[in-house]
Amino acid sequence: MHRSGATMAWNIFKFCTALRGLGSVMILFVLAIIGVTYYSVVLVDYGPSLFSGGLLRTVAALAILLLFHALLVMLLWCYFSVVLTDPGHVPPNWRPSIDMERGEADPLVGSDVQYSTLPPDTRAQRVRFCRKCNQMKPPRCHHCSVCGRCILKMDHHCVWVVNCVGALNYKHFLLFLFYTFLETALVSLSLLPNFVVLFTDGEISGTPGALVATFITFVLNLAFALSILGFLLMHMWLVLANTTTIEVTPPADLILFLMAQAYEKATPKWLYDLGRKKNFEQDDIKPLIQPVVGEILLEALSLEFRVGWVWEGVFGKDKKYWFLPAYSAEDLQMMPELQGLNYPVNPNLDSL
Image 1 (tube, rainbow, N blue to C red):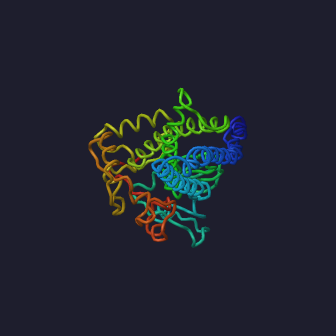
Image 2 (cartoon, one colour; image 1 turned 90 degrees about the vertical axis):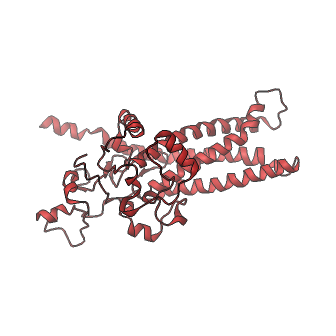
Image 3 (cartoon, rainbow, N blue to C red; image 1 turned 30 degrees about the horizontal axis):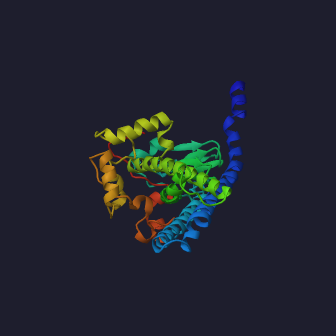
């Protein structure tokens, strides 16, 4: 017993809180990358093209600059929304309603207790208690050793945004990935001609510093575009299966899970996986649009389903907010999934 106590006293997870300081550095690093990119695209390459060259070059430069700035605004908006939005915390004195049904409610708990509305046949198996926070944990809630608290529907802790990604900022995170991919892809394509010239016998204009900035900007943005695309596709699959990164870790399990989702046509094996179609019809939530590109991409990966790129279960019912890192007041009140406390389950499965 003494050895066990000593082991708990030296729990290595308590040192994870030191990563909080790294987050501030990462924000500065992100802003530095954006600054170098802005310098290369706007001040070195396409800004001067507005006032020199032919009409076609001027129009092309104007179009690139307008699109660049529009995506940059959305990227920064989504980024700081993920940074500043609380991912979701457990309400004070939260207890599962199964206690009330069994007559085990704590008489010392006040009338402001908030109860879960999960089906009776599934709640009991997921009643958990966090010894670090000294409180009950709702379904899919996990304790973050970096933040030092329990996070609702925690996906992962991201040092790039100095925050956890959870129930209330997951949409912002997905939009951040989406707009970042579009921006980095645009920068890579727009700087590609200038990058090629650096390795040919063509005429090179500009100072050495400007050329170095263009080279670094192209390499960084191309690397980010490719990596973020893979990350975005992975999260698409996780959303399709109604699961999160932390629920299918370690990485080996994640790979097997994605492969099973792509090829397996049997009954879902994950408690919250209602089937690919039902995952988009939770609480009468149905996809309203099916973009052709998204449909072709998803059908290429699995022929048994057709789903839209945007779905109300994550992005809300108000279409005006679908591509914005925000929710309408009606969505926040009417969609229990956004609160991170209530999730429909597969009635054919009674355990995780």
